[in-house]
Image 1 (tube, rainbow, N blue to C red):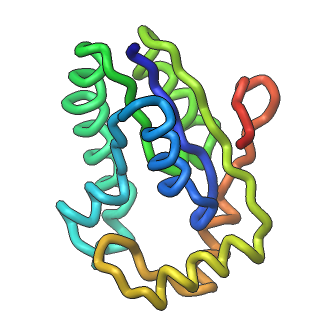
Image 2 (image 1 turned 60 degrees about the vertical axis):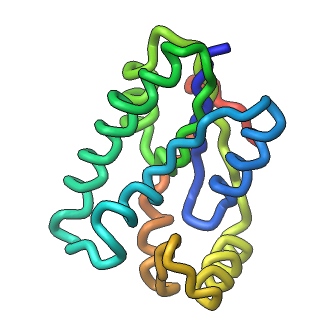
Length: 155
């Protein structure tokens, strides 16, 4: 059945891990990962001045070319991206307003968040971003926790 699952959370909250687990649980939902597409298309060194622009291009491609095509075929999708602001969450709801949609929020303690990021950094895999503690802190301060009116499910 066509349904959209949205992963919402800070860097290191476990969105990708949860998305993979959820995909298995519901029978093979297709995961659309903004980070994976960003790394594939633009690599690890993205100029700060272009980062937001690049993300918007990737989201547009994944949503319009990927997400809608998959949903039209009756398959569920999981969008693996932080959706840090209410504005982003409203926009994704509007983008997929013809389909059932559930926003899943991963709320994790700040200390554990960076511990996970530090472990990723040590692993040195090319499929993930390397992030300093300072950058992690700055980015996570931009996160707007969803409120009750947004009808999200905390997992």
